[in-house]
Length: 106
Image (cartoon, rainbow, N blue to C red):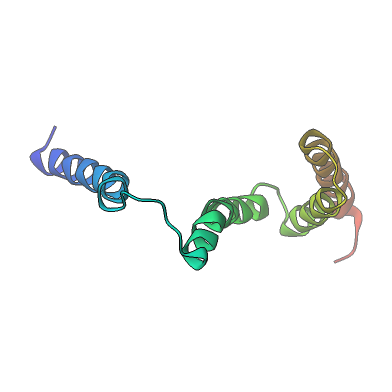
């Protein structure tokens, strides 16, 4: 292995460790500011959304079928359906769209 690859891996390890270690060592007491607590509450949801949404649009053969499946998933999720129901129904909607789209004049 080349030295520069080992250096890159070492730098990544140090940066990853610092990102995880610094909040634990610098913030020792409970965060009482309600704006910071509110911000930290929504960070996991925003991060998950930012990682998932582009993957949804590129996972199928067509962006149109992906968008229709995403809309179906959102509708079912907002109606309070279970995660399994949402996933199965959205996948079925994408499958039907993928089968129908080649025959539609676009």
